[in-house]
Image (cartoon, rainbow, N blue to C red; front, side, top):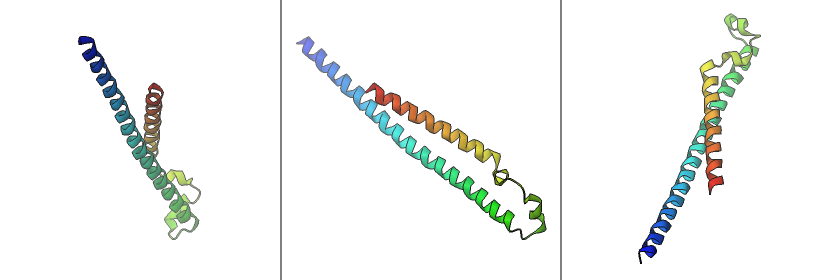
Length: 106
């Protein structure tokens, strides 16, 4: 009889571990989706910044803008924005790797 209850206890532990693993996977999938959206937003923001900058440099309305006529459009982007994008991309890679490891475990 004691063996029967031990077996039930082990089965319950296995179910709980499986449930926790699935919960971790779901949580990571949600984080990955959110991080992808953040990365896409940051890329779009940088793209728009450089796009409008190039347009302004091609058709300068003010003499001041002639100074920057030959500048690379990326010079207009704040370096912290580029760094934040890089960090976000690294975090996304980390989350994807973590999810892949969990998938291999199950």
